Length: 208
Ligand code: 5GP
Image 1 (cartoon, rainbow, N blue to C red):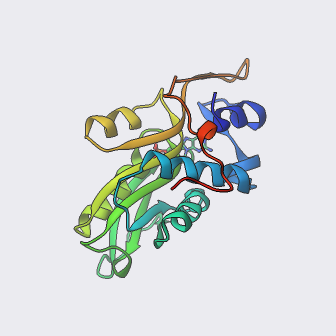
Image 2: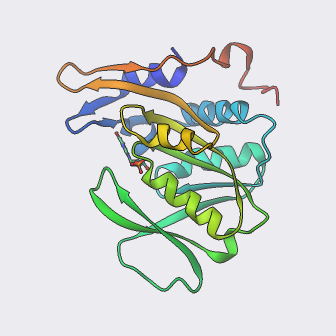
């Protein structure tokens, strides 16, 4: 089991409606050590991939994106959400239905912050149906940029987002993949993943 799976079992809880709450370390209070480990692990998994920008969506992706932007030493951009449609003159705009809030959001980035020369690593806290990530991909493509990869902390493997993105050919890495969860018994099963890095990576002196 990897560090994030362990942390989820230790501090997370499951709510009815297939919602995993991890407010104590990611979605409300931020555990810097966990965020740091997530960022190092994503950087390791995308080793050799060219990245000149990290893109996420407000709000919970920002912590991971910032830590990762620090490791790559590249700018971090977060897409903003807004319910009402607005002029697209000065921004790239897409739409995403919010799984947790059950509403459609406009998702936008101001034009000066995405370019045709960008090689973008998209990052988010959760991947469920893939609405948020697909909106971010759309924004990158509107700007003429390239999606280098997609890095996720927690993928909910029972939902279709991950499957669809992999079938579309994107390089998607999720540190924890929930295969199933049961709120009545508060149990979670994770998908088996390849051997994990932390054994061969000292976070104080990372190897890249
Ligand atoms: P998607 O767009 O992939 O359907 O859903 C991803 C977004 O919904 C994430 O940005 C995340 O904020 C939210 N989300 C989806 N499922 C969960 C969940 O089980 N727990 C939490 N905390 N957020 C979720």
